Length: 383
Image: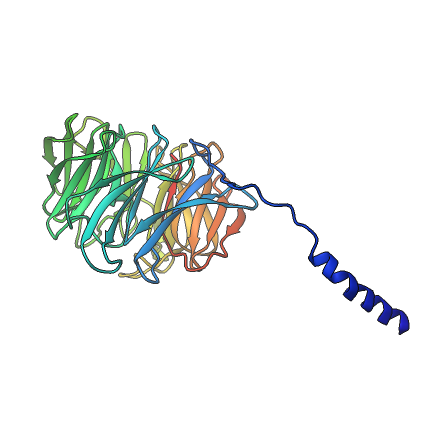
């Protein structure tokens, strides 16, 4: 007992010495940088802070790392949108701010960030109060194929696209797309947009960003009975869409006018009997090998197209056959495949965390999360 008391007394006597021991000082400044070109296992996790909607962000996450997944972030205010350039070391946030925080003069703009430092390096102010303020989607802000132009979807409620020259840092035009929605790049300086009557419009821009031509297709999207999701996946020169009831609609992009290709089904007879359907907030992705990934829900009913799903089905688009079914550890709402040789499948699960699977085998690898107040709306693979 006396020995215990003496030991405690010794610890108490030495404690001030330990507390006063010098800790090596950190160097100041101590600022880390990212590579100017990101690894193909990295993802952009775009979230718009569903808890208050004012201040969102895009997280840069390494899906292949066993630890220290978060590499950095950039701001994306008030239902902002995000895009990445491959040909330049730049990231873009398309956002809206108010002069008094939550009210006052509204400014819509594109903020340009340097990939390595994540510092803002330029601002491009957009035409006043036109940018669509709605649940962010990847097709609301995108870059042209040659990455000269940024394309911003507007809704006032008239629909249009603001064309921004990202090299000159200037707004150069606006294209009206009445009755149509979203922007899907096609070729170097063209895009298609889906229209409310079930057709699509193919828009070509000239080298100055002005309207060069417009071609409206026949009606092919059955809006009333089996509409297409607004998500798409690009494989070579074909952009793939899926419908609420499980049909695949490929749209050819070669030639600049947009070609409606033959549809095919995700489902066989047994799948249809069990009422499997695509479902989620981002239901579609593709990798460089030409595999298509679709988030699927069993027993789905009308109106559940946004609910999420328990499996991801993988297809070979060339043969239009299913290669694999990946059962998810927890139901997912958003999916994205990375673009590397050994693709990873990232899934935002029902707890708003990120589950990572090996895309070639479906094996669960890790869960990335533990973050507070993060509500991912979209995932972007590094280009």
